[in-house]
Image (cartoon, rainbow, N blue to C red):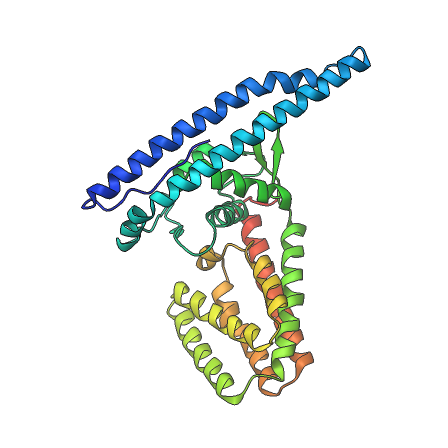
Amino acid sequence: MSLSFSQPCHGDVAGKLAVRETSFAIKIELSTFYRIIDRVQPRLVRVHRRPKSDQSLGQAISATDGAAHSLDDARGSVAESLVSRMEKMEPAASAEKAAPSARRTTEAGRGVAFGSKQQLSERVAAYVREGIMIGQFPAGDFVRTEHLAAELGVSQTPVREAMMVLHSEGSVRWEPRRGYRVVPMTEQDVRDLFQLQAYIAGELAARAAGLLDDATLARLGAIQEQLARAERARNDDLVDRLNHEIHRTINKASNSFRMASLLNVTVGYVPLRFFGEIEGWSAASANDHSAIFAALREKDPDRARSAMNDHIRHVGELLVEHLRVHGVLR
């Protein structure tokens, strides 16, 4: 277990000393905790041995209770000490927050901002999830937490948390004494993902059809014109941003927050940062939206649902083809 703290700004000598002092104190507290565990562990191990008599059973239970209480006391003591130490760090932390925050980027040039409001472990999970989708983490390979932590410039704790989340999703599989192995992805997996997205996005569009006012529809039309020009100019980044704004506006207009949140979960599996590298995606955004807008202007929920469904399935097939060509799918 390790605790790491961001360095304060160079001009804040007092802040540096406070962080260094507190870090050292925490290490001492943790060292004490581990020594207690070392003493308690043999007593817990003895419980697994089969007692030869009722008296032995009673002694085993007593030993277990004593060990448990010792461990709880140690945990409580360390927790209280850590809270106290962290409270003393607040002045140094305040000085650090006043300094400009750094944006971490990886050597792969993916530009992942790890300073957002999203939890660090969630950001790491999104990075690996997307990396699996594009083949950065090949099927069957092990994802080494220490290497990934070094690559992203974070500690191993959020990386381990992220890998546990991905294991629960089925993206990786934990193998004892070996680590997390990437689970192969099939064409059906990708199609299932987009089929789910298509259903939810279609329903949101249907609900928005009767709620979008003329001013919002006019704004969407203007954004779509910008998107079409960006697509002709091969400005994939701008196409991506404008496409996101169009879908976000439609989803928000549906007044179905929970359903939109579910859609966001499924979108998390799509490699959006590589939007421009997938043949046909920009063109799909420029061409498929016309049928959606026509249905929204006519306030026809059934046509809006069908047009959005077709659009999402179309981009899903483009991704399947891209992944097939690059040998990602199994």
